[in-house]
Image (tube, rainbow, N blue to C red; front, top):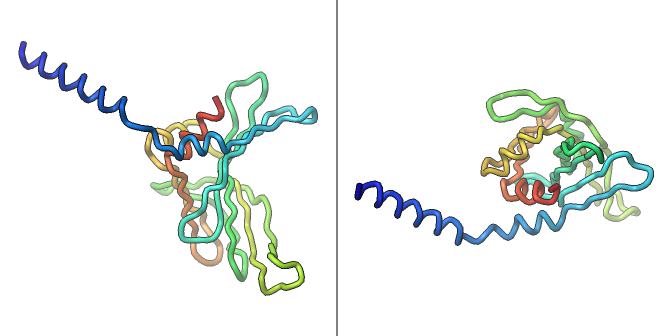
Length: 175
């Protein structure tokens, strides 16, 4: 009997500690940074999260979604822009941890120049999209970062990591 009482007291103590923990402020920043747009020309509402810098390479990733007005479920895409000098990497596919291959969509490629009069200050960019399931986002929000490798035809592959706090903040904005 006393063991059960001691267990109950320990459980209540853990619950009290867990509820006093302050939430990560980056979650609120992402939630506030999500934009929502629907014009009279659109059938669907578009959501777009803030840019999240890639680690180890110049570029960013963000999550964007499209939702029908009469359907609560949304279609989600991981949008990635990779910037570099020289030839395009030509991303062919993406991979999840464990090796599962995911099809990607090439969105845009080109050159961006900081000074239009000087071609020396230009860099190449490649924009790709990876379709995500809602379950992938929810799993990322539970503490498992969303990690995807973009498989390049030329040069090094690119690892894209969306932290769980970003996924939490993004999903909070959709609700």
